[in-house]
Image 1 (cartoon, rainbow, N blue to C red):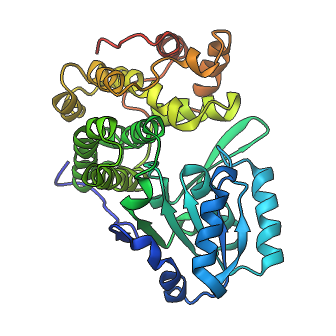
Image 2 (tube, rainbow, N blue to C red):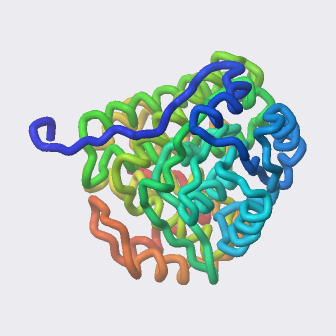
Length: 353
């Protein structure tokens, strides 16, 4: 592998450090822009409005309508706000929902993006856009989707609720785990994936006990950057296919779906490529799937799809869609095996592999 690989670094400009979000206006100007539309979810409207106030004359307005899974109808409304405000760039403040909306706008307009993450989603450093329409989630990969500037300010994550912190971090960990066995993996992406997993293993238990611990919050945000970067650098496999199916078809919450599925998809692939997933077993102890499940349980993370409101009757449909046009995967995918995997995840069983 070391003698035969392709690697391309991310073009995103990364700004990391406490208080660095206050430099957002300066980065808008460095991009040669003067009218920034600030994006957020409805829940973070007040924060978005405060950011727009700090931007002063650089702010073109606020659109606080971002929601999970980036529905195309929401993007259409955001595009109206872009056109009406005369915005020449977007500043996305929040988690994966807001980042996704900014990417969807950029994909349609090629407007520059400044992203200020407040969770550990990691999608802010990828050229990948997931959108939902008509009950299906599809993904696009294009250079215009990748944000130009990402500002990681640990200060903004100090108040992130513990449950949301854990779920978004385990979501990011799923990117790192899949990167280890990706078809186009390379030594650099694998190093970043291992480092990202280690950062979360160290930081999350501290965040559980001391949510406002600044060093732990910074370490977790560092893990999010690493894990997101590898998501953008290599292809994803079975895990992301199943999560896209569940989110797009049944509207299950994004981060929690990744959290629950990760031990099961990792265990499924560990049966085929144990040597590639050995760093996971070493980091979390025991078997690959079992170690990830134990870690999630120790953090109080959700463990069962049934707890998200998914019906057992929905599992057949999920297995059907997930195996229709499967992503590349290191272990062959068949409907019966995926149905069994989904049953275990629905029940919240601990994987043995």
